Length: 228
Ligand SMILES: Cc1cc2nc3c(=O)[nH]c(=O)nc-3n(C[C@H](O)[C@H](O)[C@H](O)COP(=O)(O)O)c2cc1C
Image (cartoon, rainbow, N blue to C red; front, side):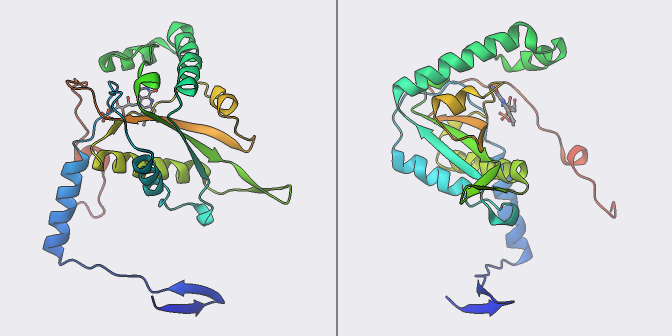
């Protein structure tokens, strides 16, 4: 690999892969159409998934760009049944309270088409739970060193991991039991890490139905300058 020093720091030659425009368009179309088949699946089978596979998915997420390359994320991967059971119990308690008074009427109405409620069996049934923590700051020799654009960075890492999960033929759901502090306690994480997202991962159950949702068309999600 060709290396060079630029402004006093080591750089490596970027390995370019250039496609002719028509091929680039075809690849973008195929990738979009494949991504469009991803769905949030809440019926996850208990069929085993290897640790190696989960590690690979985590590494796919960890390729994400991050503010000043701080990579402010920690993925806690859990297959231990007792820990999963504890997480389910704590999450269902929070979710019960949310569905019975903490969430607004409008929120409950918006969730109705998804068929969700406070029961979260997937937290125990899925072979793996990955709890993503964001690292708000690093501790360097006991000194706090703040990370940059933490939410943006960790969100992108989760997105890439979700895409990798889909690529492997597995399913997940982006679960956000609220509040999530119980995860810090159960997983014994330090104070400078905060729970960000909980991803149960596994194969879908044999016959699964998902909400019949439509995604917004291009005109609703994009604005081009110039328009034509
Ligand atoms: C930040 C975030 C939080 C979410 N929280 C939950 C959740 O707690 N429980 C759940 O069942 N789905 C949750 N979802 C999944 C959404 O309901 C789902 O993505 C949406 O209905 C669209 O469905 P699709 O993913 O199949 O396109 C969440 C999604 C995101 C992005």
